[in-house]
Image 1 (tube, rainbow, N blue to C red):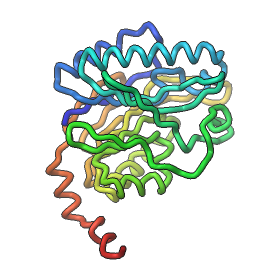
Image 2 (image 1 turned 90 degrees about the horizontal axis):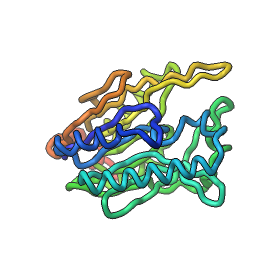
Image 3 (image 1 turned 120 degrees about the horizontal axis):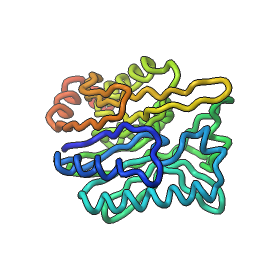
Length: 263
């Protein structure tokens, strides 16, 4: 199965970039396109100063654009989007194809003093549920936000549901490059699944920090090896998932079999 990872900064409502890349992806036989975090909406630090009515208008426009492109180019999009209901913002990841839209409300949000999504968004704090899981072209996918990679209960579902690939939109910045690489490789290896990470690029400046989003979108194999990655500029990465590699990794390492014997 062929998948594309789109690495961009935030884009406005009038941008033609999405259609340009969707057209290329379709020509290359891509069936699914993963977008990075805070790409369809402004970065969080800008978002908190944006009127809610404007956020709602922008998000609705971007969803309609993806619906049109999904139908026109026979694509499924997985993309973070801020939804608005009763003047409350929720941070979600949308799965959009030509027939339907599904939303996954992010369960764990960053809550640090300099970056407090948990305080701003209306996402509920409740017992952990499985991430969004869906099937496409014979592969089973899970969707979780970058910050959620840190939390084991979400990965329990990846194992129990026999997920083949985890789709991870992120907005990683500062000096976190190596840490994120190691975390993604570890999760892919211990769960013998592909991980596809789409990290945004671009910059945001405030009084205290220069927020530089460094890209490094990547595909990591079920053996925990980086198969392909991008730099820190606008790029499109197209990769093929291999069913044989999945089977060989799971059989060779035998992690799931070792667990079955102890149940």
